[in-house]
Image (tube, rainbow, N blue to C red; front, side, top):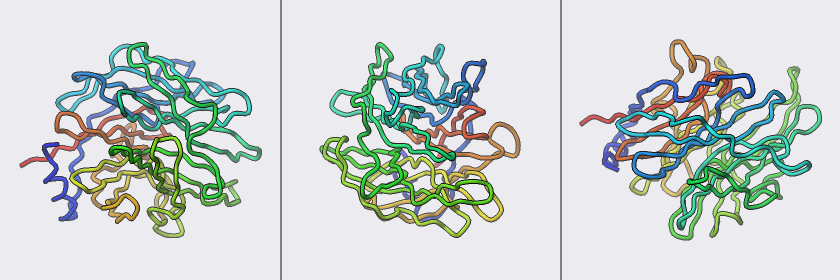
Length: 321
């Protein structure tokens, strides 16, 4: 990446990263499905990427769509009509009420899509754990590897375990995942508390979890961290993540943290470099970032108002001399 030095400089000098918004990439249309949430992308060939994102049917069940996209010179444009590639799972399975796209991983000639399976519980409670699918980039299909999750509820993660960011180096796999801390009954109903946790693996399937929170809650108002996205540059881990709430703001914003080992993080939301717009599709909230690199530029896919109800957009990090 041509801007490794500049990335570290922005971090060391505590200067906001220079993300520049490029507008909507996908805007939901039609009546069969709503939303366009949790976008992620993986390089296919030349300037062509595969993009996965999540849409909801009339019963609010999530489905995963795939599309080709042309990426270059600070822009992304979808090519052709997105294809429905994965529906909700079989009755009783961890993903029986919906599937959510979260992160692509390329490894040893294969492309994997990690996804979150959704299961509704009584009284508006829910569970979400992590599955893995194999991507066929030519036939444009997703095939579940297992009927059950590869990372899910266990003695360390009693409520759920939704992995959204991965880094692979040789035979060491790292993931940063959302794990439930507790449910709390309020006057408005049940409120979920969940944070970012860390796990390691030798194969991307069997994980050793470290149950402590990577980033503590800032105060008594903050209660959720959504979808961390992690990039390793010159030995330093850079994380952008969604978080809510503050005393004044109830909706998601995108924060930032850095780490030298992937487990212990220094939070500095002030240099995240991206916030809500004065008006338009991302004026009420921004959430679910996904950061990737192509030809020396950093790109961020993210959602705006309504958790992706307005679609997803693009920001590009433009670092000058």
